[in-house]
Image (cartoon, rainbow, N blue to C red; front, top):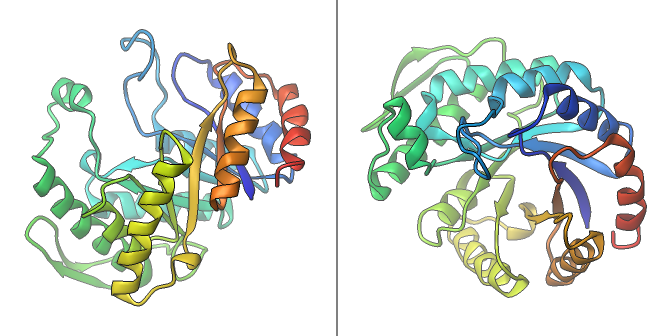
Length: 279
């Protein structure tokens, strides 16, 4: 099993987030660091501070040198796919080819209502997501892209400069929808991420993903299957380690450790030492 960290960019100071990512960059065990794509906090006071995901990634790309960087996951509803493709290419260049391109359909009604962003019904949202992913891949890999979808239209569109990673930065798709999300994962993704309640739940979803992969001629083993494990300060590290071990035994490839608010840089070394026994 491999390991990564995730920081929730809510209710924290920029310096705290920056310093913990820089500290993770110095520990080879942690292969990637992640944030989320929201404009409001998801816990506590929802009127409190929350840093924007992609400008944060660009800054972290300049502040670090080794660790891979990603947003878990970018809501397609917030940005036109062509704009997002250009953002992704730029961050990949800034980072020297360390971007993990996290994508999702989006879901947050509160944010959409507040900002006047349409949140379509579920079926349309996933139709838009499927078109958006295909359009992004086209822009990142083709010199000129023309795409004629129901919701996305590109006419002789350019995305320059191209990303460092070829054919494109690895795509992570987050979600647990058995019919639409996992089918899109099978078609496009290099990583699948799901937040689940138990390994048994995760295994059931992975079996569905394997079926979709078979339908499109892919081996599910070629897709990194990751899980999120949150460290609850009240419960202590042992509870998180037990959960990680259970998902490891279930076959998860990557555990993304969700750090508590205000985590200190010096907390990462003992965490890495504990995780080394599980890897």
